[in-house]
Image 1 (cartoon, one colour):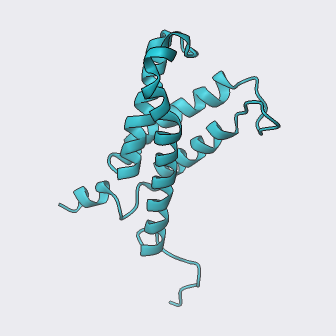
Image 2 (tube, rainbow, N blue to C red):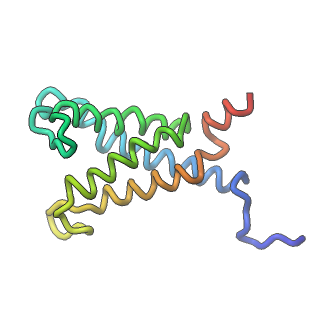
Length: 144
């Protein structure tokens, strides 16, 4: 059977390189662009951090930090990827549709928007369905 030019199985080399790059970018941007800053500012910002779930400001910030640092690092490593993206998906749903519920979908000017949370949500949902790919700790540990 002749293969089409763009038809590749999910476990092929090129899609696995794509998933590696995807994990590194979305995990890294979350960890270093969002989580790390929250972690470093926990003491000064935890009392005023949004509490959309009613669990307290400090717990809300701690939960966000866990997701945005620990889970994002696991995504980058490709370790327990499908499990690690679940808290990230939940956090992005809360960020996009509760915390930024009144904001427009797309950024317009200097105001806040749902757009970043929805983009991260989509990325983490994709990783839930595809898995981490061949270049991941999940794959490495699964072969042993």
